[in-house]
Amino acid sequence: MITRSQIDSLPSMIGLYLFKNNENINYIGKSVNIKARVISHLENAKLDNKERLIIENSNKIEVIIADSEFKALILEAKLIRELQPKYNSIWKDDKSPLYIKITIEEEYPKVGITRKPAFVKTTAGEESLYFGPFSSVKMVEKIINDIRHIIPFCTQKKMGNKACFYSKIGLCNPCPNEINRCKGEARLVLKHQYKKNIKQVISILNGNVKTIIKDLNLQLNVLIKSNQFEQAIIIRNKIFRFDRLLNLKDDSDFYKNNNEKNLDEMLDILKKYFPQLIKLERIETYDISNLGLKQAVGSMVVMKNNQIDKKEYRKFKIRQVGLPSDFDRLKEVMSRRLQQKWPTPDLIIIDGGRPQIKAILKIFESNKRSIPLLGIVKNPDRVIVGVEGFPNLFLKNDSKVLNIIRLLRDESHRFARKYHLFLRSKDFLL
Image (tube, rainbow, N blue to C red; front, top):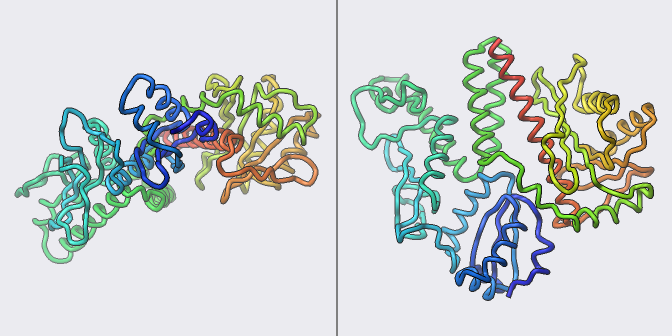
């Protein structure tokens, strides 16, 4: 049986949670805040028989962290389809579950929504690919719509003699009907492009998005450098769509569930390095967004009294022209922040390691400020302390303290990127 003590160590992050009885999986769920969602299962078990069975018949919880809500959704569907957990019943009204279907056997594969018997298994040589199951028609339609605005494809079941309506608004491009009207080399090129689009759609639905995002940004840079601003706006809008797709809700409510216990643990750890630190009522986290373009920006996100406080967020448009790196841009942001009459933070967190920490400490010194400072570096995530020797905290991957720092780092990155894309879009419209 699952107990509250098992839940206390779970992360407050986006991802999947698996209720297991030894190695048997009873239930797979997803959440933007794994810990809060599992707590709700425990509370609901007092009222709901299915929830009670999940809790009573499980003895451990396994967690899989995801980069985004979209990836969590796709991975949840994949694991439910493959593992068939005992208590997963994600469709309603006794209907078969929903799937996204791609007719890969056709000359021009189509993408659509279908209902199939529970737990479809796709095998080599099968005529269509299925992604799911999903519980909501609205969610599936949103996924398809967002993907189609990024990578155009055809949804028509029957071929026609002229370009379809959707080709006229850029959602079916190249249109199979148009391709068939072409001859020779032109037809081969367009057919290859359409199949490439379908491969990218499949890649997205498998959760593999980094290559596609990188490709879009490369296209955007080329178009800007060649002054093709109308086409650049189209690619920019695709990037906006991708951001929306990866963050289905695009909010930060899940950060609010970081409780006092987690921050108390962080305070106990940090006191060893910062004896003057007596509270963590205000934490500020900084990041830079640039993407190789002109509109470099910095972000400041704030956690106050255990909760993200968006009213306290601040954004910085980098003023100095020609700064060679995000390292120098971060120094500008911190210098400008310390000149403001905003409340003094109890702790500052930056996205960076020892070089960034040393530079920021010098800025503190020149401004006659003494503020506890941490840096977080990636691959793997580890936390560096801004004191002599720059020690590593060596926090475990599932540490509640590391999770809080990660959440703040990720939120500062999201906020910086959002502002960067906004300024980029203004540039295009000038």
